[in-house]
Image 1 (cartoon, rainbow, N blue to C red):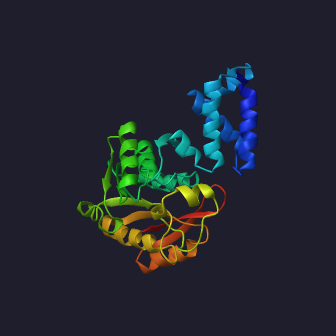
Image 2 (cartoon, one colour):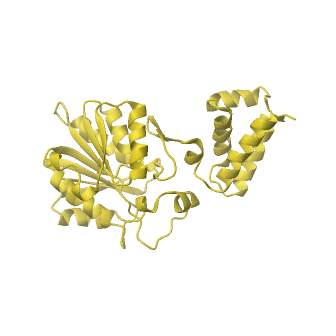
Length: 286
């Protein structure tokens, strides 16, 4: 027995709303498009034309909705995460890139575009899925971008995304932030990082983060700044005079990170908001 797409979509949105999913209508549409293996625009056209779901397609869609109702990230279910102009592969073992990090990437992109050098060099420390590094490499094609990731699970996703995008001006390597890329010491123009910065003992509010993002990508020690300290030290080693460091952080950590960077010898630290107006990234000069 077939089910009208419009009815299935309405029921899915209601189920997701009952589960507390923040954007139930949007997620229901994206899950239906994924289940049908068509673009979202095509799915909407099918709904408008009064198309039906057969039994197999309806069962498949209901399984997808049930997973999302358990607060499994939408990106894990579809296997894809949008980031700026890119579509990245993600899944278990890697931090799902968030819209607020797009502004962090923009700060690095703006700096690289402004440099009067033929091939500026950028490093992304703790790249995860590769989101920042690959966005930078895509949007600043004359730059050379190096991404570092210590987690083998996350590294596999970053390498897959690099292969899929085919960016020949980017590279992804495994390694610890503290000892990364000694061959680039003193030669880097921009270091950017979205490190783990949640203080130990603080529990993320969103189940998608709390239950599914890897703890290694979330927690940054007692005050949340252990990895930030490593990023600052490594960036000092990697960068040339005048270079920029860009660090993402929580909205209440700007002052602490500005102080940390000043103590490490960085100049003119400044904190930037994201598109919601919350403090999101701090930059400073070598």
